[in-house]
Amino acid sequence: MQAGSQTITVIGAGLAGALLATLLAQRGWQVEVFEKRGDPRRKGYEGGRSINLALAERGLHGLRQAGLTDEVMAQAVMMRGRMVHPLDGPTQLLRYGKDDSEVIWSVHRGRLNIALLDAAEAVGARLRFDARLEAVDFDARRFTVVDESGERREEHAFSVLLGADGAGSGLRHAMNSVVAINERFEPLGHGYKELEIPPAADGGFRIEPNALHIWPRGGYMCIALPNTEKTFTVTLFLPYEGEAPSFATLPDVGAAHAFFASDFPDALPLIPEFDADWSNNPTSGLGTLYLDAWRLDGRAVLLGDAAHAMVPFHGQGMNCAFEDCLALVRHIENAAGWDEAFAGFEAERRPNAAAIQAMALENYIEMRDRVDDPDFLLQRQLERVLAERHPGLFVPRYSMVSFMRVPYATALERGRTQRALLAESTAGCRNLDEIDLGAADARVRARLTPLPEEA
Image (cartoon, rainbow, N blue to C red; front, side, top):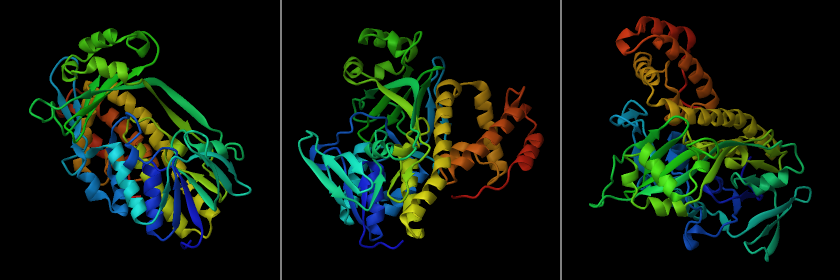
């Protein structure tokens, strides 16, 4: 479709909504955006404390299209890999990729959102804040927004609605009454609480800045991601209920302090405001959102967290949402009408969203249970060897997800084949010298075909 007189209405001015508005306005579309929160550029960012964002190739590709790479990367901190902190023994860096060309980046959600809003406005998108979607009449193509107080209501006409309004999507709620979405939210049963490592006395980082720090404890864990302010955001992931340790067994700050002293003894001294952080920061939930449909013919479509919210353990929520934006714009450009565009977008992205949702859940188990396991570490060593011996044929799943734009569904399928191959090749072995590399090479050639570099 060619940009014309129709106006595209985007619901939600978070990361996905702002990028989507920018991409559409760049292509000549008239775009209006409605956001329930106030303008963060005037009121300050109101997103609250949240898990740091990990920016990878899929997200970077979206920022390149919006012309924002330099601005965002100036505020990003490189993470080369996982710095594993065992309960006993020295720390160990497990690189994500082969060298510093394969890294991910820690970015600040609020600053990124503001940069995207400025970009959207600069190319002509009209932004409306303090305007929460309350109701939609899809037959009449009209919708109602209200302000935070609920006293000011406005009704607007629309041609099409694009729902980028997050896991609590108002547009999804409205669509649910007229189309068989079959919404299912599966809670993880684990929550998270955030703490902070401040800068060192000399103003620098207290621990290695270019890594995602992880304290795996089997069934639960802590992680820490760096910020440009020389701080680290520390996140504890723990079951809500059950025998110790769980949030239920930590009824007060004293119990929490004692828990950290015993289970994370090297982390606790880095958090001088532990008691205040524990008392003041909420315990938040995690889960996965599944839908049977993302669209209502050619009138409305969902994307990002509104369509497929996921747990954060692969760092792909934002990256996947940005990839959604690029795919939706491409389908709009190539289709003859809105129904065709939305149908094509959903057909392409739903299998890939389901794949990264599954990989994010798997990665939680890997991060909390396996990163200090000898069998896992040996498989990681062999994975690197096979990737060097068979470039373009054996590609680690993490690389496919984070450093390439291979479809998530492809990465999931190939990753399972490769993990089975690694398990077979390392069975009964204690180190690389004991592995039959010839047999491993034969398995690679028999089971894998060359991988395209991009989607």
